[in-house]
Length: 309
Image (cartoon, rainbow, N blue to C red; front, side):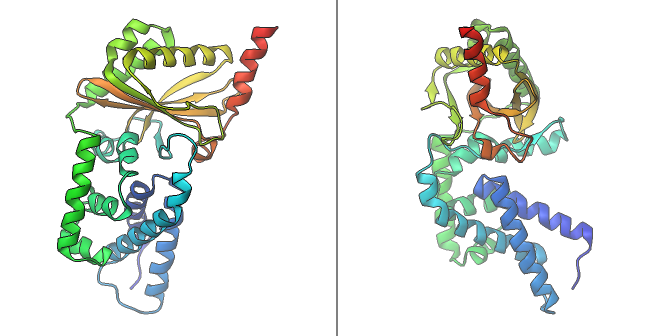
């Protein structure tokens, strides 16, 4: 059996979609996909018949991702500060239908919740509820009984519902709230900004100990609004810019220094008519796949230097 370029690309996209949601890391997902494709190529090259390359690749990618999560558990538990996924950035609006699907299963907030599940729970939830695999197929992928797979699904769904209730939000509402948010931040309009934020909005920062970031999450519309305005003023002080983009299917922005170096990715979590969360990813290791990374420390030092001169 041989696969043409188009078939291989479709398989690669599906394997990456599963791996990235499992791992929350672009680089780690790409490694998993590469290894899975090598194994598929090796098996096909040996002359062995594979009834469904798609099922084979999904199985290998899922198992590799689970193994990776198990081996990385201690490292993630020792992570400095909040852990947030590596962002996927899209400069354009993209296809509306595809974008709506991405918002549901790729949002930074959703992936952060998945991080609290066991590797097996995460796999079952994603394969069943996102990729629509049958329980029999998932049982085969995980080498478990269908009964145990169903139990894992129940526990995973319960945890996700507790941590992240689902609300229907239109694309137009997403755009209205995001546009208002970034305009209010740029103007330094605290009142307008607070009006867009949920009362219990959460601002989370991920520096990984490698860039200045929040020491802990900030909760509450007044505190979050003040922090965002303060950040915007700092950015204006070092000549930074904010570029609206799509982050993991939802509204977000790239924050750059005066030379165009990427300092941060912001992602908004919009639900129930308000902004429920803001994620600020500044760990340079999680930004390098997007653009050339600048130095947050140097940018902040330049502001302090101007203030003392």
